Amino acid sequence: MVYCGKPSKGCSNCRERKIRCDQKEPGCGQCDKRQQKCPGYRNLVDLMFRDESSHVIKKAKARARKKAHLGVSRPATPSPSEGRLSVTPEPRGRPLSLIVPPTPLASSPAAQDAEQNDDSLLMSPESGSWPVTPPMAQFYNLAPACQEDGVAFFFSRYVAAEETASHQKFDFIREVWKPSLSTPNTQVDSVLASMTAVGLTGLATRTGSPGLMDAARKSYGTALQLTNHALQQPTEAVKDSTMLCILILGVFEMMTENTAGMSTVQAFQKHVAGAVELARIRGPTQFKTRAGRRMFSMLCQRAVISCAQQDKPMPAVLIELWHEMCKTSRDTGNPNRRLMPLLWQVLQLRSEIRSGFLTDPQTIVDRLLALDGEFEKLTSQLPASWKCRTFEVKQHHPAVFGGICHLYSSPHHTNMCNHISTTRILLLETVLAEISRDFASFAPILDTSHYLEVYNKTRRKLKHMVRDVIASVPQQLGLMNTTDGSIDNAKNDPNSTPSQPSRSAPPSPNLPASRSSDSINGSMYSSPLSTCEPRQTQSSGLTILDVTLARHQEDEAERYMLLVSATSTIVWPLFVVGTSTACGADMRAYVVGRLHTLYMETGIRQADAVANLLEEQHDVMLSPALGGTGGPEEMG
Image (cartoon, rainbow, N blue to C red; front, side, top):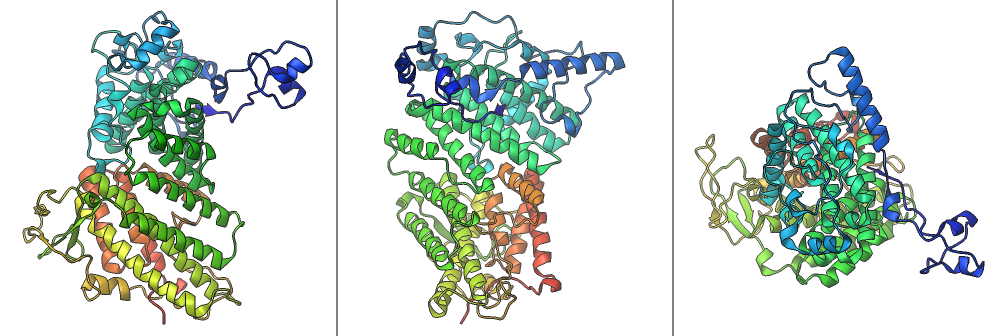
């Protein structure tokens, strides 16, 4: 799916003359002034994505001829140069499930509108609402068992799983699409093909099977062709099923391995750009259904990631549509309505700093602190049902750090609070880094007495945020009983015991865990007033300006996709905590251990990779060549 940029809306006469077209109906004013007939306007949906069907068909036929000539009996694993659009046909004689039967007659526009508004006629072969399918889909075929495995894995991971298992939650899918009856010659659709592609990719990652990955690419190619075909039809392009398919294909983009990290990032960014343009065309009408609102919220989350990768602010069209959605939503008390605009402000500030538009240290620090204050205010105004209960574990348990656990009323509340906490950690780390950098310069701009106090207060806030995230880990890993807060006894740890309710909040400063984070790693920032090389950049945790700590652009792209593709909602918070300057040696060992355990128990490879990154980062921080032994301490 190749996004071609925003096309001109004017008529062909105005475009040829390179003048502004007022786009009036039935003809523009410019043509009327020249007393000539206006040729009308183009369908923008047709221009959003480039149709490469002929190129893919030619490529598929060439490979099929080559295979027949060589007498190959099974499809070979595509080389990296072939990319994600592998179209290798299955050998003849195997059962096929993605073969398209003769296309049914298209229904009238009136009938299509009626079908779209009828919940009993969701997109399915039996409903008669199936879009016209291009013949190219016949080149993609899978064994029925393989397709069923892919769909089953998708539903188990992205539909029916707990919210802690995946941040890409498609539990609304049955409001948009329903599976077809298990009959011979069942016609394939874009949603089914995209689900199969994502599911088989997950299975291939867990099993290391090249054959499954090749089948996933075939399904991905099928879904792309069907989606492109739907985008060429205005009535099909604006349907929820089309946006659903694009969002599922976006998951495939995030999951797919690529030897060139930059290529994967660019593919993801183009995919998001195309989805944003489609959302603009769908307009406020997409918010009439719950599924439409959920899909738009999911798109906004991906747009935040894409904008952070490109150092850009949030697209204005998404901001405008978000406010339109809030007008139609009855859930006025949802904190997410306030959280998303705050994330836009973070993106805006990041963009201004990275572009060089904002350079004054005092302005940067003050705006960072103001943003953190808004997040803190949001936290204080959360409904009572969102507040966590604190439990104390009397005896050692490997999944509990410092003897304290937080229990929220639902996984969604846990994820939301961790999202707020991790964002605040990035803001506070940026404050510490900016103050340290300014004080290390030849001519500091910040007032020493005032910003030393700011530094120490920020440091204390940071420690509190880190502890809050760590205390939520047992529930995120599914180890806490949501009724009484007890911790599951690990088989390899017979001494672990149920936790006990405690009215105390996070551990006090005289607990060992707290002393560790205060005293260990005491020289990462050293003192803001200590002598330092001019404008030297000192080591720090993740900041809003650097969310990967990568040394090279290729490494940064790879880490972006590694973190984005992690299905577990706890991987990112643990990475933020593990790289924080408030994370001591004991806490970092706990974080690394939880990530390795998560990988061993669930097979989520990103957890293991992030754990390895933290271990490597810790070794770099302790390197004598860098003169470092860890994180910052309060300054006097």
